[in-house]
Amino acid sequence: MMKAVVSQTRFLHGREIAPYPSWEQTVPIAPPWRTPVGFSDEQRVLSRREREVFLSFARLTSYRLPLELQFLTLACQWKQDTLFESSPWRIAAHPAYQRIVGMGMRAVPLILQQLSRQADFWFEALVAITGEQPVPPEHAGNMEAMRQDWLRWGHEHGYDC
Image 1 (cartoon, rainbow, N blue to C red):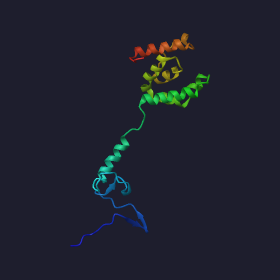
Image 2: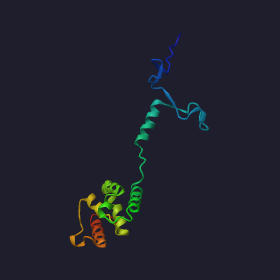
Image 3: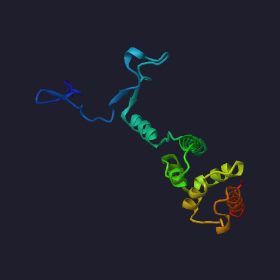
Image 4: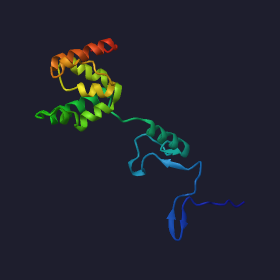
């Protein structure tokens, strides 16, 4: 009895192209010259389906930093780059500050925590994110009064600050 052998390699115009699709095609986990200790030949290969599941999980896994760490990194970068800047508009236009604003409502408790520690130029970000302005006109320009107004707003809206 003769069995037909189908080569896994295909050629088109004399050039090697992708192999024939096969459900049972195996993919090596590690190259043979770097075989992990204790792996048999059967353990070193994945079925095509296992590989697809593995790769789909890798696509779903997020490699972002936790929100607090991302916020603190951006805040430190913003403070360092605008340390000697006097214009509030330029301070608020810094890319790191804008990325914090882009975090949306998730950044509000973190900004309020920063404000509870010290008065800083977080007011523009809070107005942009929340769409509210709890600072009365008579407090404009007074950093400590503006800070207290925003912290009061945070307490009224259930933020722990």
